[in-house]
Length: 121
Image (cartoon, rainbow, N blue to C red):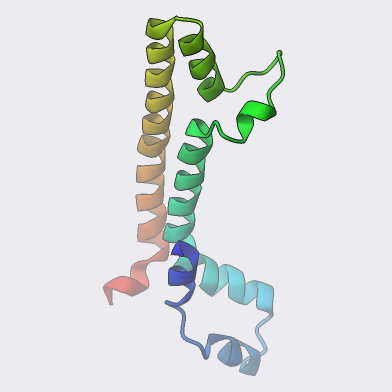
């Protein structure tokens, strides 16, 4: 839904206009579509990252003994009676999501000021 809302910001005639001035589709994508949709792409990426950190429903069947995802190890620690360790691991997952958001926020703001100047006109 986020990506569709971002794409609806573009006028319907943008492709016809680009074709009339003989602008290639890839150039239209990189010069117009991508800058307009950049904030939405960052939000989608952040949502997918946080969702991947906390998802256990599908991952629980895919892990091996060598690599155990953090969300699955929280469940394993809790089942083993190590509630304190499970809580600490859950806090670490939350801190990872928070640190990713704190890194993403200024980068998105910087790119937004560079690519979204047309919104201030």
